[in-house]
Image (cartoon, rainbow, N blue to C red):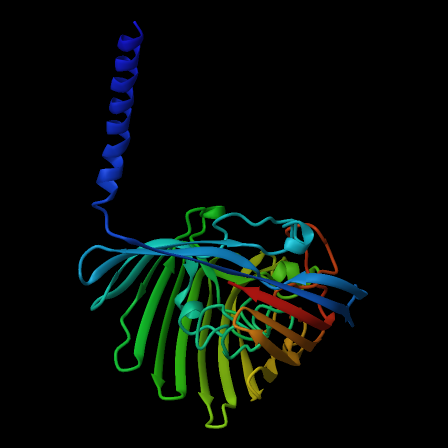
Length: 420
């Protein structure tokens, strides 16, 4: 009996081993996968305030997250010229507040760039998923000419990923057309003699209010030696200035509107002198459609819905000078001009300026510390805000949180960013 039971146990063990070995043997036939985890934690200790508007934000201290993230890049060969590429990236934003932002939102595993695609040596790269538009990824302001890599590389916005940031959001002083597109497709050409192009389109699956707010984006950049030049175009359909909210005191905001569109065009350039001095400059023009309801009045007994357009231009410049092997002094300044044909207030009410000054010290390849000061001056109807951690003086904790028009934010801080 003992011998029979032993024989049965051996037979079962051999069968189990065979079943387990089969998928392992099959996996041995698969191509090797390149697996690269990455990320950083970026924390700032700062003093902030905003005054000048109807609802001032009183001075206070805070700990702020600087756009921290965690991700993994993977790829594997299909043949000698083609490979599959994929990325999963999670935002760690507001880790200092348990992952809940001042607008009440929370981060998810795939809240940042996450996609799958194919990359060919001769024909370029095609991606599908949730990814930065060509206006941002190819000719953005947070990297050498694109991306969101501030403090790790020099780009037009030297203070990208900090409260002193000047670009990359619709409440920034410059490069307001940058966006991450959900439900999107992207194509990047190979680089040819320093020239590269990209195009993106974000599909509007929600169709809220029956509107198709799909977004198209185009970028082209050219590199020759120490000079880089980029141009970009971005358009979001069925999107215009929310005049009604402006009349209610919310300031400048965009919303879904039938027949309107928001368009952005920009030119950016950077150059590094033999002294290693970095110089960057950019100009962006925004054109906004809008609809305005006009109630009946003497001489016009019927209500009207008027269509129009507004135009606004932003400028920005940056200078960075290394001192020794580890320290760099950095200055960035930007302004956004008058809003032509403004439906609420005067065109000059929508002006704003921002200056950010400070320095960073690279302790080693994984650890950098920095200090900064930034000041924004908003005119009566403008609400330009701090970069990665904006201030909200109204509706705090809700998706409709906003900075009161005319409030002018300031921040002084010290930060530490640890990368891997």
